[in-house]
Image (tube, rainbow, N blue to C red):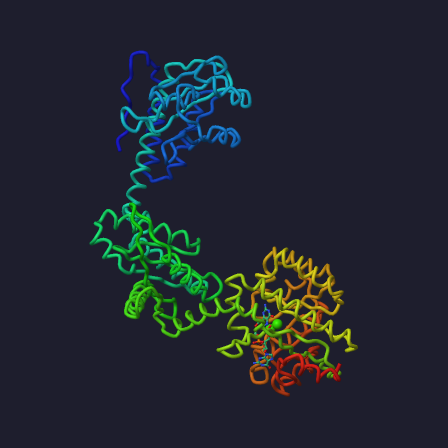
Length: 615
Ligand code: C2E
Ligand code: CA
Ligand code: CA
């Protein structure tokens, strides 16, 4: 790019010193371009240099937005953001201030008094608010006859530009044009190299590189990710029968629909033809595939309205998961492709995982999701209760409500099989409300009939900790006159980490309900963080109890948790105690309560009544 000084008309007579200044401005700016400095930074420094050359001046660069209908401020380092906000959206016309008029007419506009000049008649409130006296603006030209924006110098004072200033404006506008054109070219090159021209989605190259990056990140974070490859079923028939134009329109429709079903956690690409790919990142928890699979399959249930036709299509999906099904982008794509062939073979319009077991799980989970709503209506959920005993007196002090699903065909389903799905689908709110009501009613009934008080512990998932539920819980408790001092809510560590959840937890505390930290030791919170939480109990996760008597490491962990927890004034519960040896160790360390198969499994309410003599 050679510096290029615009040829000057005779009226532009400037001194040698001024001419040198202008040359230096050009040279320095174009040097920055050559060095690859970010274009916004270059435009900012161009504005600043121009401001230094003209006393009491504010430089600004405006350009057309993407749709080409109005102007927005691209650079204006000395203009306050409030003023920029007002200028954004300026529609070029004959009286759109100096800049709008310059772009409209493709000619420089030197307004010496903004209060009296008709070009500024629509912008008088702007003049008043920001005390603009004069504004000189030059179009930034893309082609000879078309402006893409403007370069302007404004001042508080009313004044006319000297020959030198006019020249400074024209040169600055010209350089800004070079920079912007180069930027546009770079952008369109990027688009060609990384985007699919038909749909605007990422292309195969871009998908590969994003997948590789995501793998690196997943390794660092020890997390999973999944690759979906989608191939439309029956697209070839549409293309053959209707022609390529219509085929292309169908592909665009599919691209837009898929995009609408995805979030920031997904990257959608068109690999070519009627093949699409989705990269699914799991920042924290595994297996969030199923809802996405059903969302995608559901998209194709609607007819595709294209050019007065209505087409029906479905899609087959092949899935591979990192790290189980491959460690590199190449392997993951290949294995997702293998899974896709499986999906095609088994009748299309379905998803297959490279790992067949997983597919089975996907199916099962999707079925369960549908069955769950019916189960609540049919009263197929039931509550079991597992007692917690005082280690000193062997008395029954508390019970934990644990939900089960009595499925009409599949039998008794444990909560680990359906709670995560209920959480994903949002159904946990309704189910959780039922659990809460049922457990409270059951205990209230016992107490009202003369059974001595004990604590009732109810589990809450992260999804349940919101203002709406808290209000409902409060209403339920008040409605049945529940003695809240006997109620405990069990939450897990990850849940407590969020500020918002903490706020809801504090509401529970304010109602007089105690909070107990479940599965302690498996999350990421340090013991020190516990001080900030409204806790009264700590439940040591059963994974530490399992090998307690053989594993020295676990012994140290459990000892530390007990000692630290007690120093914060918390009661300590050990869960999953199955042997006498485990119990003895825990008792020795000063653990307060014991819960586990050794003393009692979770049992239905009728059976629990047999234990009431231990209260
Ligand atoms: P959790 O809160 O950690 O519940 C304790 C789990 O440990 C229960 O499994 C219980 O049956 C099991 N367990 C108790 N003692 C022993 C033992 O000695 N050995 C072994 N191996 N296991 C023992 P369950 O009932 O299958 O519940 C699993 C998880 O499901 C619960 O873990 C909890 O996270 C969730 N869950 C259960 N009920 C509810 C509920 O009502 N609401 C919510 N949100 N989650 C629930
Ligand atoms: Ca629990
Ligand atoms: Ca637990």
